[in-house]
Image 1: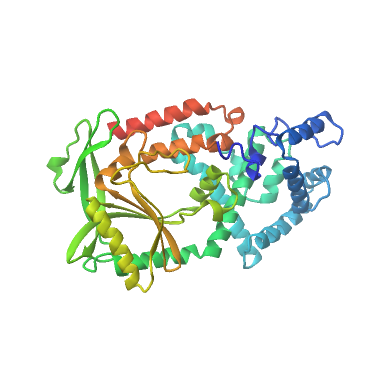
Image 2: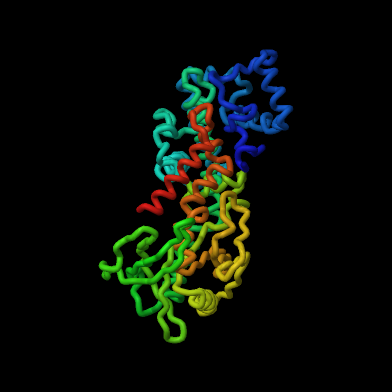
Amino acid sequence: MTAYNSQNKFALISQSGPFATLDAPMKYFLFSESSRNFTKQLRNTGLVTLYRVTRTQIFDFLNITSFAEIGTLLSNRKSRQEVNKRSYRLLGNMFGLRGSEEEIIAEIMDYSRTADRVIRYLQGKVMAQYSPYIEMTNEIDITSSPVDLLLITFNNHYHKKARFEARRKLLLMYLAGSIDQRERETNIENNFIEFLDFLNEYVWSPDMLIGELEISCLLSQHDSSNFACQGVEVVSADNKTNLKGKKGTKTTLIKRRRFKVGGRDIPVYVSIRKKPPEAKVLKLLRKGEENPAAAVDDELGLMAVLDSITDVRLFQTHLTQSAIKADSFMTLEDISDTLTGGCYESSNIGSSANTPMFKFFARMGGMRVEFIIHTNRTYLDYIYQSGVSHDEYEIKRLFDSGVAELLFPPDIYHLKMDSIKEDLINTCRRNIEEA
């Protein structure tokens, strides 16, 4: 339960601690009963320093000296506009944004859109069955100003759910800003383009046009007990007569490139990814990390699927030799190879030790790229096998890390996380085995 028990900024939206969103905004009177209880909770949880730092930041950000002045901002539109204008300048400088006032505001509004995309991603994919339950309040969805969102958290005219979502959106915007700053510092956009250029110029077969793909299908048979792949053959997508599904069989379309080794063309299915900002935000939450440099080490990645372990070895050798041709040494780091046996040891919450793969990070050309390489058989286990499939993994890591409960606390969204997790996994298995 990484994020749920965190004592960094994630604690500010946890409903299990002193910063929980209440039915009505807390009255910050010095000797009130609510203030005494709040202070006691802070001491018991060791979060006194976090509160003091956060309180100071709120006052600095809103240009006030006490919580009592928040009422003035809520009622005075002109003062609020002045604070808003000032806040964009402060945030722009904090995140190292350059440009005109309008350009900086546009960048920060994009952080707001990233925050919204985190929730919409979960609505549309991992927790799609429960989309109506976790839908954002309209007023929070359309609000992008950090000042307006912060003031909503103190406004007793807003429902508890709306005030919580305003606070949650602020946290997600902050993480989005940190990620954007990290991407600019590491020049990730240019690195991604250079990585694609390297593959097209030195790795893939020169006999194929850039972007040219050969469409094939993996026809596979699966174990009835856990749906592990028992056998697979590559067939032409045009050979429709061989693709009639039976119980325990799957037909998986793949689009393959080729690379040359010793005059031989070897087919390879490749999926190249650059993590979108919302995926990076979720990863920070799962890791309980505010710093993208410490938590997101797989910004550039490639997954390759080949016909055999022999082809996997040839592909790895071809990569290092291609780097030499590109006038760069390539070194492999954090190597894990379980294609021929053994268990994959991962620190990632929700991952399975029974996932065979050849995984490493390749450092070359000023980049560090994650490679995950499969055979056809292990790839099919990666997407279909019970307890191993990536779709199940996405569900498990969301719930087992505590992120689902952090983002959608049960007392606000009326969801029982344990039963929902089980329900989502059961649906996932049905979709895989019966499709």
